[in-house]
Image (cartoon, rainbow, N blue to C red; front, side, top):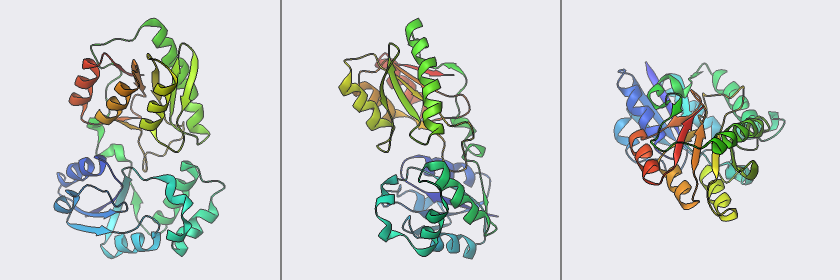
Length: 265
């Protein structure tokens, strides 16, 4: 059976494709960003480069390749929404169905379109369970009591922010909200918080209650730690079974060297 990977940028498409390949399935990769990892071409049985707004071409390519299961993985900038000239008629039709342009609304409309073509969307975690860390403190560096309070406070707000379609990350210090992630992404939000606060910020990242993990799993890794170091952060908190930790050994090593605690709650 052929498995489809609609790939954005970053490491996750490569990691997932490698894991699926171990099961013996043939993999059809459709890269929808210009900066997708080049190694995908070597791993995949078939590789196609198609613009993110060409939804009809993406679906037809999957159908022609006899793909029965697919996942959408990797970073896809929402800035594409501000350039509708790149959209085909099917993409415009999908956008017209959504009540707003939040991730959940867009994902739901895209899922309906793909599955109506007879292709099943697969939860990313099915093949990447090894990237879901155990609950607890992962680093040698431990959070203080006040930082634990900030984690609880920040996580509650991050869940609400995710529910509202704003962003998955909320950054706090001493019970005060320093920054909330918006369209700029997690790393940029962390750096923005660092510019507003001397040091010691607590970064919390959450998913909405009905989050669709077929499209997006909150993800942190070495680049997140680089942003935390630049912002002089003290803690990174993610949700158990709801967030990927990529390159875990390197990520934890870098965090410990910078005296940053990583906590799974």
